Image (cartoon, rainbow, N blue to C red):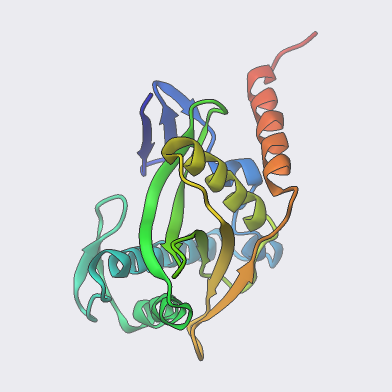
Length: 215
């Protein structure tokens, strides 16, 4: 059964059935901006900047170098992005992280999904260490890291392992800061994360299937 992603509207399908995304399930909606009362325009711009930085990191994983300032690349919706110094300043944090930990990019920006559980998402990065173990690294370009990233990465892990039959040994969140080394790295080790993610998925699916119904 195929798993498809449509960037326009951020929709996922397992076969012909539309399924919830990982971020929808865990409720990650730029919580730090919403909490601080930022306007929708600021939220939109922050999301767009984060998407561009993700694409620059993906470019590095694929090509072994970052694009140059002024170079044009494409985002997931095939829109043209002109790379500037601010974007590169944040993306450099990802390069530093890989170099400091001797990590090798393995896969990035891939759509994963579960045909059994009926959900999907787009994970940021998989890397391999010197022992060839696979690490899942979720990137955040924001001032604070929501606790929901633990459940988010758990969801990606469940979907990836089901699709590819490969074990993910470790989960991380890398906050790209644009200052000093350019990153902060947070290990995600919650033993209940996969269970809690599954519970939230089941709850959401119940809400969807029972919306508007009466006993």
